[in-house]
Length: 237
Image (spheres, rainbow, N blue to C red):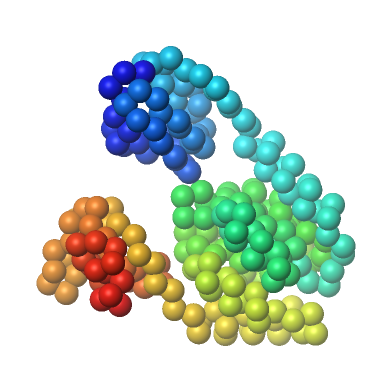
């Protein structure tokens, strides 16, 4: 295209799907998005210029294949851990900590009840520990318990570090109830601080925080610091 504006394109598509990535320059832009209405995305893109390397995948099919591959690799266990994580790095971490099945998901891509249920049913055990690792996924995870004949315990992990701490507390020498108590105790001992940008204007301790300004959030909930740049915020912690 010509005179493409990456920021405007990102703003336009932000509400049309999840996991949005827009990168490029004024003459060529690459877009990745998960959307229930791919036709709308393609229609918008045709008004920007000529389309190249268009690829539309059915995410349900990809997800089913992903779970199937994990299931085939896992031997039957007394207790299986199903955890939610995003990215190859965290996949590797949770695999090394004993996760049986990892469901792709996170802050901008929350798995559905159906997706979590599929993972639970695919896990090679009748006893399941489910780690949502995000505050927005906890409620969804809790609904799975009533939809399966398996025994499911949801550890309400709100962040990835809490999920890692809970995983470290797991032991095959303990039963499901004992592991649940140990993992919940380990989870509550972890405080997570995330540095990001404010999505809207707000106030903190009398200080005005502007939209887009760097901020620090405790345990994915409480605003604890704000500054002019990321480094400034980090040094205030």
